[in-house]
Image 1 (cartoon, helix red, strand yellow):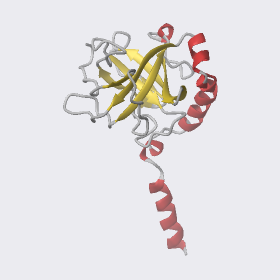
Image 2 (image 1 turned 180 degrees about the vertical axis):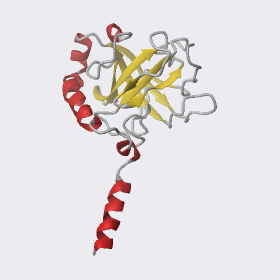
Image 3 (image 1 turned 180 degrees about the horizontal axis):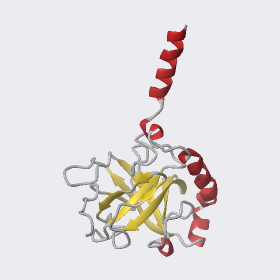
Length: 194
């Protein structure tokens, strides 16, 4: 019986997704608080009222990242709403610079939050939720010029991401076949301090 309990305990540990296993203690509670505070932005009009501007384009990355590119899996990133007044400010878990929406029918559904730091603001890798940001990388045209080198950290708080909570691209998010959908290769990585 003792072996059975040990085997079940081992199975329970291995059944936890890697993204959950690698989260520092307290991160899940912090993310729950962030999600609760940002839930008001399920209404994208309220996000616009609070200073988030739509980039209009729905970003889709059909091929996974290759040599010299960010190691994104194939998937979508959605429609970004950017709050320029928060760019360059000290990082605040409750004030992401970007909100990400998934187009669903004729509406936008809140899917993720993104913290965004240009390398001009920080040449060193920023950290939040006990994790280092992805990057540095080029900007994602057409929503930002490639010359806008930056770090970012995505948290898929409203739409489950099978690739992981903090993976930038969500394989389960597909942009619709519409003129505002942009299919692009993952951004190129850049050296520190560029």
